[in-house]
Length: 310
Image 1 (spheres, rainbow, N blue to C red):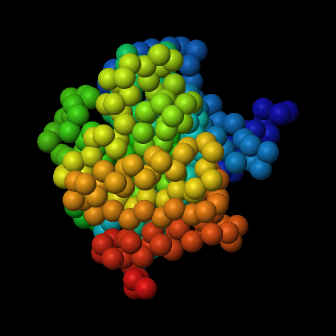
Image 2: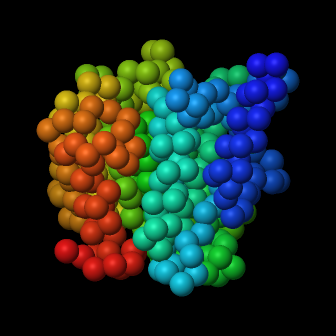
């Protein structure tokens, strides 16, 4: 009976959050993958019936187009967080796609593979393979989807912020052989309480362990520390963090912003006194709930969202 109840919740979730289009990311085969018959996708629910997805084996893009009458031609690939162990796909996925749609931006949730030695030859690059191909797929389909190929951004929360940051700094890294020469570089980044560094004392230990393993070398920590990889060609970024975040220190966003400044890349950083971690759109009315409006103004200023910048 419990299994039937959970199945009904999954079905209702799909109906409520029904996207316009669902695409398999790797229809011709997943690079660097290993077969594991006992490893399959799991959806669990919090006490508030919020879905958490784990053990993803076949990555997908969940595409939500903006209404035609308000569409700006921009799109954002959304990377939910979850410590590289789960995907918080509700408040850092579905809710975000709808919010982007309200500004005329297509929201495209990336249900990416979480690092696993069981299904990956090299788990450190599995998520990066997925986000690079996601950006390429959106850009490849820009004309068909009425999007501008130079208005394709990436957005991430917590560990998803690390993935979005890595997409922004390691987009030239050849982690698989693409089928064409379409660029994997995002045109802009939105990084919300992101795990942007893999350095000890700054990073989120669980995210570091899940991505790089228990005893990662300093070389690997440096490679995946985005603040060390920023250069003049990195995309402009909007960053949000709370000073009292005890899960992911605010230094992650500060160091990334400082790296952007040194490289001459436009950036905007909002640090809120309180808020903690994992608040998504922060609908509770406290100070961190101001970030969506600040981000909207930033997007409007970059001619990516509809509306007037105040």
